[in-house]
Length: 333
Ligand SMILES: Nc1nc2c(ncn2[C@@H]2O[C@H](COP(=O)(O)OP(=O)(O)OP(=O)(O)O)[C@@H](O)[C@H]2O)c(=O)[nH]1
Ligand SMILES: [Zn+2]
Image (cartoon, rainbow, N blue to C red; front, side, top):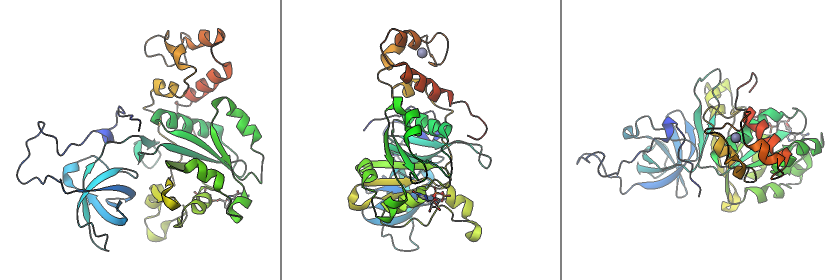
């Protein structure tokens, strides 16, 4: 699996409870050699659900983890009561190194960008073709987040019974994205096979604006029904519940769907243009003559000459520049 470990984020500080050298191990500190491995399925305030073998274990962070957080998709080591029996509590003593991180964007209620999903390898960007209208800028921002994190983007275009997909697909033609088109009949007839093919063997984070049909789609894909994104104020835990991601297994161990209700967009403040360029292998060699720390969106960028010399399609450079331009926040993002 590819590693993208250089994100300058507090959550990525590596925790090495077993490391020799850095800190002497006291006899009180448990070695956790007997810890079980698990995967974080949900996070609800301080309580996490961790899948250990086939049991869902409720756990909390051990104090020794400090500020290091565990998020949905994290591989963790857990100790304590791992029976999964109601009212038992285990402890997470280690968060394994992440192969990828997705940060949701800061918003009115929370000024910090936070890691919401770890270890996904695919990002499904769910967009309705109508009702609500597609928002290309939001798609672009999701694409940048995916490229930066090293995830394969997958465009999921819903409600094709209301509008045709061609105009939108044309906009993204130069990016050569994987895509699936779904409509109302797909759900009635259970015909979601095309998207299953794209999800097989992947850990896919699903993102999409309210109303695009994401819940309908996720429910059609997984065995256990998701209650819907609209869990609300009745329990008093509404806002929190809607912003927390949730990992759901695909039938037949075909992979994982990670639903991200309430995640409207991804934080792009930490984006490194060189990682985005990595998703454009045809353009990447053309950056060799760029000035140091080139944003690839400035007058001295060598890509213009490279493309003018016929090394790559101008439409590809246009797409790259359009994506890079979305790093600047605008109202509505
Ligand atoms: N016409 C049409 N309507 C659809 C389709 N898929 C879902 N819908 C409808 O779109 C509405 C929104 O669907 P949801 O699945 O709740 O959308 P969501 O993206 O999960 O929205 P939140 O629950 O607000 O996060 C519902 O009324 C669905 O019945 C489709 O393919 N075609
Ligand atoms: Zn450049």
